[in-house]
Amino acid sequence: MTYALAIHGGAGTIDKSKMSPQLEKEYIKGLEDAIYAGEKILKNNGSAIDAVCAAVCVLEDHPLFNAGRGAVFTSNGTHEMDAALMDGKDQNVGAVAGAFGPKNPILLARKVMEETDHAFIIGDTLNDIANSHNLVIKPKEYFFTQQRWDALQETLKLKQEGKVSDDPAVRHGTVGAVALDEKGNVAAATSTGGMTGKLPGRVGDSPVIGGGTFASNQTCAVSATGYGEIFMRYTAAADVSSRMKFLNEDVQTAATHIVMEELLPNDGTGGLIAVDIYGNISMPFNSSGMYRASVSSKSDLVVAIF
Image (cartoon, rainbow, N blue to C red):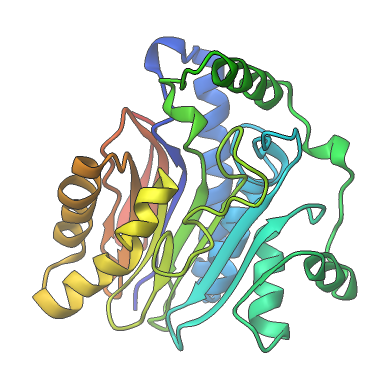
């Protein structure tokens, strides 16, 4: 049997000219920590679900990535976080939107999947679920980062001037993981703070099953990152699986087609990660870069940004 794991920390947010050696080192370290956390579970015959949750939790805890602690601000200066988890074994799902307080939104999504009769929950009920299952809750100060606050102020200033930022970081930023375990099961997890300066209540593709997250033991697991409105409209994650299932495409062909031929011509900048049921990994993107890493029982660790 084989295992495989891929992670991403967002696509399209990277300007190489502004990437100092120290900052690049910090991003690489964050990606390495996340991939090692997931791989440790898979190496010990753990489940794909456990592996993707472990990897995403590390990224949610890192202030440089737009999820959990590093989540961007809404136009009101608040945080609203989205996350989704999907098990390819039975296509069971858990998704949350507009969450604030739980340290790790992906674990909240898992509680929705495993402890409720529902697939997707929003609103005040989320904190009730978090509290009833002893998830760690953090105060608003924990989620404040100066970098994200400054980005919000710039976005609001441009809006007042009737302008829109040409920095893709404003509408990009997600973390995710996909895995295949040694029992042959795949899983996908995606978590995000959303879009800088978004309207309160806005939900992107990350928690939308088929948009930014999908997994099926018939084909593959997918986690996307990019301009969420476009990824939802083109059901990006599910269509990778559909092309494999109905056109008999391999995961690399299917994933690349969606990113380059479906999304890019329609302003869908970003990328995705995918792993098929044989342990093959694809990580295409159509932007300036994508924070990403992968490893499997048959391939060495790859960590890259550009």
